[in-house]
Amino acid sequence: MRRSKEDLASESQIGFYKGVALELAVALILSFEGYRIRGLGQKLDSEEIDIICEKGIGPSLRVLVCECKNVHRLIEYNDVDKLIERLRKVKDSLYSNLTAPIEGRFYTTSNFDQMAKDLALSVRKFTVKLINGKKLKRLFAESGLKFPD
Image (cartoon, rainbow, N blue to C red; front, side):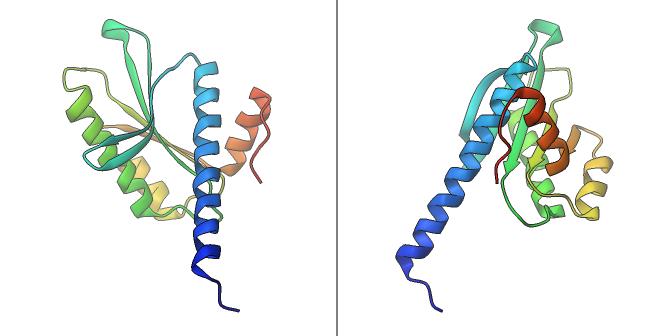
């Protein structure tokens, strides 16, 4: 059965709102961890950064950049590589004087393929943590939130 442009647009909007809902929920969890949310869906050189947040002040300032994907497919190498590129852009554009490393976290409702996991482990300039659906579900439960379907 062929779907109309309206049906495809509606599905795209639903996917967008599911993604935004995950970003908001992750931002709430991060605020419970003591992070201050600096930006949600912030544009930086035509790239959208899902979440930028900070913890501490002065020399103890820690910066966290997050990518959130509410999808039913495996997160691949290219997805994690995009997060790493966004970490570079955030560091260069917003935190060029920061001496502490910027951390990246990739939150997904699904899982990561092996190449994505290997890439996250191989990065030296940044710390990159991968949070799969199982870990994310536990974080939601600990925070009293409902995990997305």
